[in-house]
Length: 72
View 1 (spheres, rainbow, N blue to C red):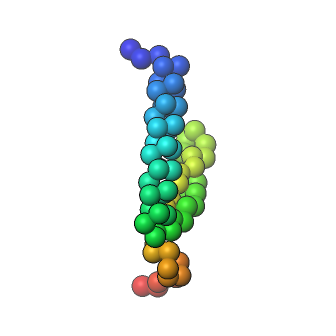
View 2: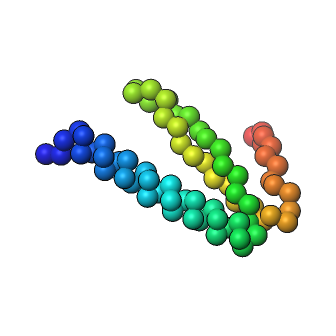
View 3: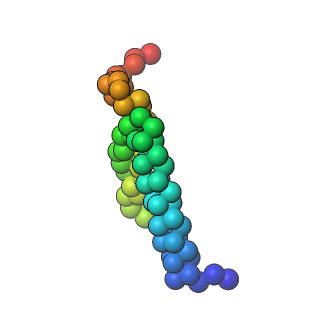
């Protein structure tokens, strides 16, 4: 059985590796002419708020996409 502390340490290591990969990918995208827009989403869970990242990519030489509400 894995202890709570071991699971937390493993989760922290995974987050660190994921952050490094994400930053490398954003850097590569920027070098190739793609801009990245990053925003956060807050999900409400029984344990409390959980923040997640949302990424959108678009070509740097055009304006960022305009978001609009589409009614049914």
